[in-house]
Image (cartoon, rainbow, N blue to C red):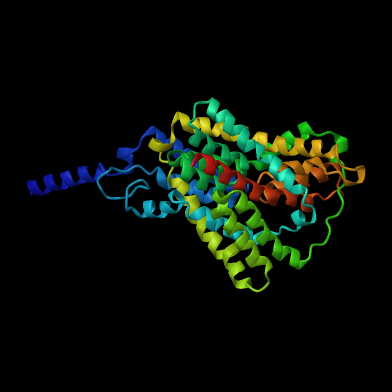
Length: 385
């Protein structure tokens, strides 16, 4: 009987060494706290819940401590289930599929009807290249600086795609930073927009956008693909899928494919991407000095991008007729956080003039920002890859 109890005691002690309580570190608790914060912001504040809930719960999954005994549990252990799912991030499979869905749900009419709004979307990408210069000054090598700088485009899939190619070791911090600032668009952008505009500029009324024909909508993704990818071939995985998805939507004869791309497909990929990106933030890998630098740079690049879009519109207005000026409140929409940044333009416009609806106008630079961030990623990948 004594031997039985001794054997039982040894097994219980062995079991206890495998529990999370026995293996927990302070870093795990810190990351679990941040995972709960993400979930709180998604549920209570409705900040990008489709992104923050999968990422927040993924952070919890990734920071459950366990004894490394060859059980293949963690996301960084080869052939574990999480590691296999994470390959879609590491190998860059998920972002192009996300872009396929984005293309299938995006209406480019506002941009087609007023092509000069493309310039506003392009101007906002200055945040990417401004952050690139700052990252170099902070000691990141060129590839790392390029991967970090793309946060300024406010496009999570693009940030993941580029960092998977240029700086895989920083991908978790870059992805979390990108999605965090995308969720905080309603907090970050309005103060910058108010600071850089005056009352007269905020009251500018823009011409109603012209009607866009179905033929134009069908031609746009074809011409858009050829122009952007001949210019930046390295952006093909993202831009090709974006314009392909849009053609599925606008052709009128592939409705089932378009509905699949913008519905079940993008939902499944969003879940897998969010959970695995969140799980990649294991404390031992994530809590580093570089992660702090990346979060700071992400904020700086986002501020630069927003300010650049607004200031560009103010400058551009100097060359436009009085009856054709652009309201600078839509300059913030040049970042590709679709459609949240366009909604901010609308909210601020109505705040100063309850009858001045800017949403349709803001969608022009907003969708241009999606294209612009992918082009910028292609440029960086082209000369850094």
